[in-house]
Amino acid sequence: MTYEHFLEEYRRKLRTPEEAVSVVKDGDWVDYTCSLGKPEILDRALAKRRDELFDVKIRGNLISGPIAVAECDESQEHFTYHSWHCSAYERSLCDRGLCYYIPMVFHNNAAYYEYFLKVNVVMLSVSPMDRHGYFNYSVNTGVAAPIVRAADIVIVEINENLPKVRGGYDECIHISDIDYIVEGEHEPYPDMLMPEPTAVDRKIAELIIPYIVDGATLQIGIGSMPNALGDIIAESDLKDLGMHTELCSDAYLKMYLAGKLTNKYKQIDRGKGVFGCAVGSKSLYDWIDDNPGVAAYPLEYVNRPGVIGEIDNMVSINSCVAVDLYGQVAAESAGVRQISGTGGQLDFLVGASASKGGKAFICMSSVYKDSKGVVHSRIHPQFNGDIVTSPRSQVYFLATEYGVVNLEGRSTWERAEALVSIAHPDFRDELIREAEARKIWRRSNRR
Image: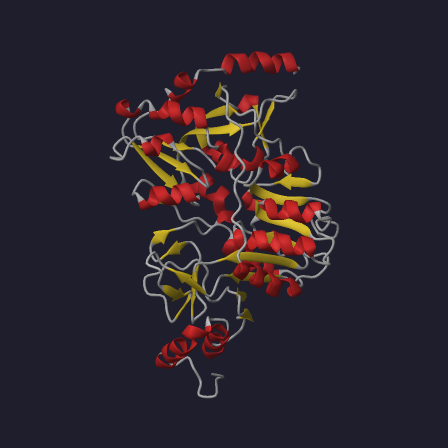
């Protein structure tokens, strides 16, 4: 087949946005995939059909706003939106009762869609077609292919601003597997503003740095603490670090620009920084665009604990909202308020723990202020109704600005003592009393 044949097929499948979304029927499940994969033009066209459609259910993940189908129908008689990992915008939709969270462990993403979930229509943004008839999933590679394979109808929206990302597999879709194509102009992606690291973020990062060795491979999340870690590693003496992460952020770009990120000593995917999705600045997207030094893979590979465990000195660094004295971790919600999602925290806890020389860290500030300015400890005596993301049996290192403790193999009293030692001093006596009441504090424990 020649490029001319592919162009002819392209023209046959080209539709207006209104024509493309006309395939959606009452009761359908529609997928928008993830982050920059959001089909902006198609989303607006589908929202315009609100009054003629009923009970259409949409799934997405880490999508920034606005999402037209969610915003146009507060009654949810016509459209109901769901997310399996909330962005800040999707969190606000949850707060308004306009989004429902789908619990999902990321390495099972492909299996969920293959065996359990119905997809009537998938709509997603892709990069322009190449001369071989392929469209690149770009920063959406981590989740796109399994959803597309499960869909009855595949509609792609060409976004001229998407970086073209090289991959391990399933990073592209061929025109022969597409039903309809939509074109249109898109605004350039705005720079995602990274939160400035606080003094507490920097202190936690400084405490973790000594645990990282030359040649280690890193998985770090997104936010002010990972940003601080990227800054500090860029200024450190560490060298020849690797990247294997579900979410690629500007922290990795900082390490690369400082000459720290070479991927030279990885046992698998040597020489390549591996990721599933990417969220960050324009500079980040420019860096990963057609870069032979990075490779995007589906999350079924990136997040599979067995794959992670094959990498020596794998260091996983994630954050949480709270932990209790038993070592249970709440990382996706505050009480029952959805904040983000399970994501890959548990995947990397298990995988990094199995790695030769591997370490898994969960980090948090010792305290936080509520909306009234009252200070609370992030270390609780015992969860009561909180949603547990990582069970106590899987938690490895926990870090606050007051220290780092290792909970692996520790008994209940050892865990309580360790966690009290990294709690804010103003709350330690109260936590000790609570531990004593629960009979997880020995008389000989340090006070």
